[in-house]
Amino acid sequence: MPKLPRPLQVGRPVGSTSTDPVIASAFGQAVVALRTAQGISQEALALKAGVDRSFLGRLERGLHVPNLVALVKLAAALECSVAALAGEFERAYRG
Image 1 (cartoon, helix red, strand yellow):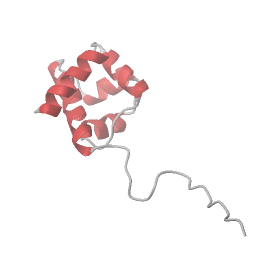
Image 2 (cartoon, helix red, strand yellow):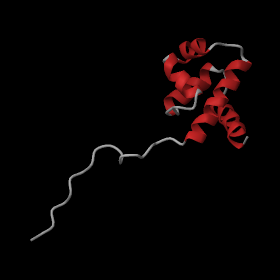
Image 3 (cartoon, one colour):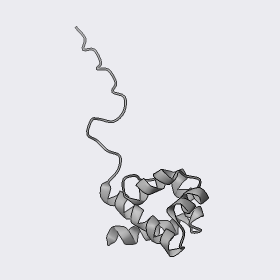
Image 4 (cartoon, helix red, strand yellow):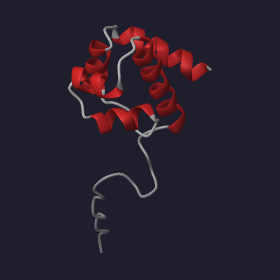
């Protein structure tokens, strides 16, 4: 009797995550550093970037990482290039 294929699992395996907490924290630190250097509030940055303030809060606390669209929006709102934001991230990550 032939072996039946097992059913496909939807989503990721239980217990897996798509983020690394160290990377998420370093990215959040980078956003905070650039935002505070400009003297703007979290709410003002969220409005300027077109993202939800709670999303930005989670991002700054290292609980979330942005997708590419949000990354580009944040860099534009911070009036820097994506490369400059990535550079600030690298400084925070390497400590």
